[in-house]
Image 1 (cartoon, protein in one colour):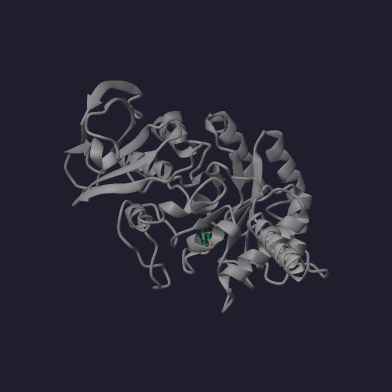
Image 2: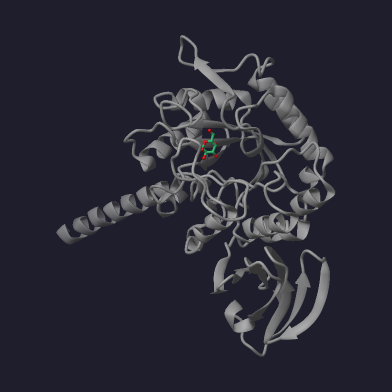
Length: 400
Ligand code: GLA
């Protein structure tokens, strides 16, 4: 009898533990961002110069440029839309810049078949000095839900000694309590290694400091602090993070600079291709109202976007590097590989991708398709080689 009782007690404990674990691991299954989020954000091009008119015209641009049809969804207002809190502690949008208020703006974005994103910060103030959400998390989340917000980017300025894991979990719980599905984009810059814990907290997490619109090289901030990063500096910091990403939880190497003028067309093609194969969120940051044909072609290349959005959700690894030449590869759901040849050097070069480096046996015969030329290149075995222009990429699929 005693043994039976003890067994029953033990099974109850085990059962409780299992239920507890199931609840814990279900804590952040908000069912969103099963593929990396795609959209547009105001910061990289417009900084604090945001307004209702600007955001509406970008939503229009997202539709008329064909970006919506190519998969872009979220229109995100970054910092500076908020000015103060009212006597009840509610966040107050800038009435001059957003005269109709946030709910009508959200309605407008939704009427275009798009989704509405907004920005706040886990500290006392945002990075641009506007009111942050500390102590107001539940109140802010309810307000966002009331406005019809679908995406929150949550920054890390003025957080003092706050613990990142706790601070982000508080806003996660607040969003959950608000009852509206909201993609949670954590912008903690990789300081507390969010890839180790944030799959339980958010849908995406920044892995580095801010991108700036140039190919390579750290640049000091205007105040002398270090540093904004070039596109390749950020790329190098992604090596080794690939195992932490997957459907619903992505590494975020920061938003796109494609079309902002600081890089050449080749360099922007490389930037877009690299972000795509890295399963980065594809959040454009340029002026969608007047894009050149080349920039539009880059941002709407559906074959490259399909690599980013592939249902398997595996982020590419750097499988080979020698000096300025690199090969990045990622497995796709159908068993093929997306392969990116990167030439960081100043001259055109031929880069050779042996099957063994891609994780395929040498004897395999595979069809290679060029995703920028939109062309089948034929059947190859053992290896594939291609000439790659300076500061450019060749992106192919290799399909057995
Ligand atoms: C930080 C973030 C940027 C942007 C600005 C806004 O620097 O990393 O992406 O949101 O704040 O002030």
